[in-house]
Length: 312
Image 1 (cartoon, rainbow, N blue to C red):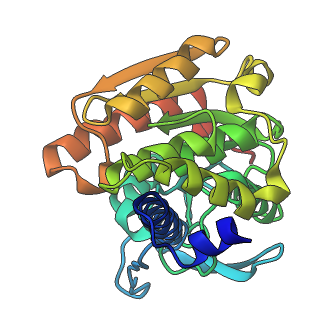
Image 2: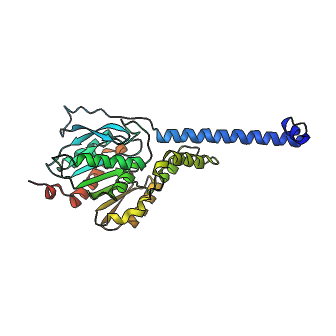
Image 3: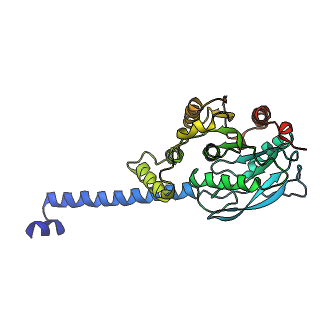
């Protein structure tokens, strides 16, 4: 009893030291949990951004389309009509990006007679919900394709996908089990959402604090427990044999350039690789944007030409 009483009400130097160490450890643990929780909240709930589009004055005659996302409710997207019964290119925006930032890329594809569809993932742009960095987003993309495949003015069996980071992961993940995807162009792709989480934590400025990254990863795995057991992209790449693929590596995103290169090297033919000094289409200068658009449009024209797919 005297031993226990000494540590409850320390009087000796060693018991005071022990009590001080335990108090510091407790507050360090609480601080770690608080910091990790805040970082995770900011990652899965990014600040919303949106672009309002005046359909009456915007070229290309876009159409506001409403569709349903299972478990998330009603969403809206923009359909840019091309040649009747031509393939549709679905543009998948990246993390903290919105569909409005891809309007010029959509116009470039529409100018070559493609149908184009723009939308926002959960937690991005105008869409509510939280980001899962690719897990739920893959199901949302499948819902978009299912909706578009019900239209009478598109090729229902041939779709092209473009995406960057989250959009790239979702495009590849969906394509591995969806035979309607006939061509894929991805930038800054990664094998598993946890890789993107690690990158975002490291960019937060406190990722080097002991245990912060590990606790954040634990919290993310808890939030995405419904997707536990989802295989990495690399495990299903063989399913894309015969599907043309363009992997775009941005040198200003070295970590994602490495993961993109790894996926390219593991992918079956046909495949192509493009290495750019700068990525992030939305933030590019005009000349860089035009070069990027030309590269993406050329890929789809070569591998999913609208004229040959059209039915009269």
